[in-house]
Length: 620
Image 1 (tube, one colour):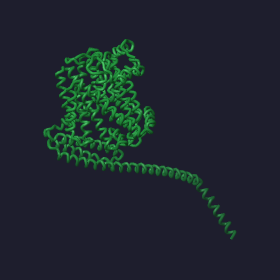
Image 2 (cartoon, one colour):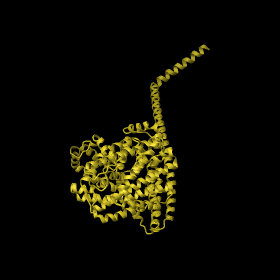
Image 3 (cartoon, helix red, strand yellow):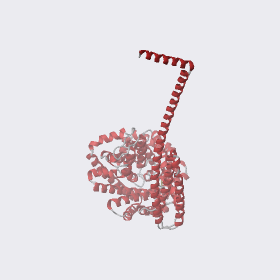
Image 4 (spheres, helix red, strand yellow):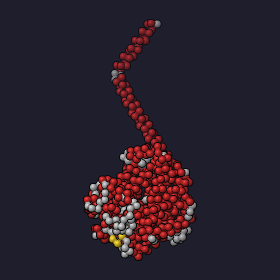
């Protein structure tokens, strides 16, 4: 057996030897083939990896396609709802059916193009999102137009021949006026008023700080003092009349709005604008008395239109100021009347026509008595209103006394640092605090608007600077006292975090309700606002009629007095709302020439101030 095995091994060895002799290159060829096979397998692995990546990309595209389809379906659903609302509006519209059917045909044509273009989603899923956005934008534009057309229909039922094109043009014009007003009353107006105030403060040597004790002695210390100096009303009557114009909704509603949009830090910037605005208000009053004159009735009249014409010789600018303010007073009177009529209707259920008629009669009884009657009424009404409001606010602050230190910390801390959202408050940055604090402060104390010197020019005073001190007193009382009390009431009660900015106007009522209850608080705020608005309208009409007198004489002034009185009732029932949108723009047209005039006449203001403090007029 062993021999057999050796024989087999020998045969195998000979076979291998013969094979190697016959095919000497086969092992090398085999190794080469094996190497090629390895490279082929590597290339196959790369192909598999690329295939897997392609599958992943396809999966992502498929997911995006699904999202686009879902969004497009939702868009079609909303579009269907829009078509339904459009059809409803079309059915209700009483006139212009031909124009509406043309509009409907165009709408259906656009819808057909939308559906045709939507088929691209299946072919180009990567662009589905962009295409969907185009369709959505198209739908939103059409739907906005439909809503506006429905509004036109509801507002013009009595005008069957209304032109839709004219209505669309009017909407565009209204949007333009709104955008222009928002721009003007943004950074440009803040720069103008604040820049002018800073310039006058420096030009006058920061007198509102260095001479504050003397100013308080000459104003607060002599409220009840009588004198026989030239003039028509007493210095305090002139001041109370000017305060009647500044104190009102801006103190009760404007401050909470500033806090809601700018945070507690906005209050700090209201203080800043008040301290600077003291110089502006002082300058206005000084020039008002310096360039005042007597009218045909023997009464002293003055204001920006007089010191622009007499001090600078700019007659056309003076007439422009007077005309703009005359028209602005009409719009402002209607807005004020509508505001209080709506408030009374909500609080007591009295119809706007009835409340407007009552307010018109009350205001008419006062303004037809002339400036002396106005001064006599406001010197009693304004202190009473201020005392009542401050006492009620003080009660709320005592109730929330423990929160006062934290409120002050919030005011100073967030004047220069952002504040995060909390409760109904959405949060605010430093820019918002500055913007809203400055804007509300300027709108509240009216420093630079040119209205205060109109009434101050009638004051009995032998030196313009002495009456100018009352302008400083106005800003101090209006912003540093009343607005500060409102701010502390809103912050300490927590009302500023309880509601959002869209309901900021009710913050004071909410704060008062924590102490007095909902019903009583609502009644208190309504009554206070009623008194504030009545006094404001009285003085506004006086401002307006003096512009009419400057432009066209006393007879036309008496005519405008009647027009303004009737405007109270028209505004209360919501008439002539087209004019209201020009209110802020007209006010800006009044402020710009006044501030420029103050800057150009700053030398005369400084001369009057130096004459008082360094001459014989100063009283210790």
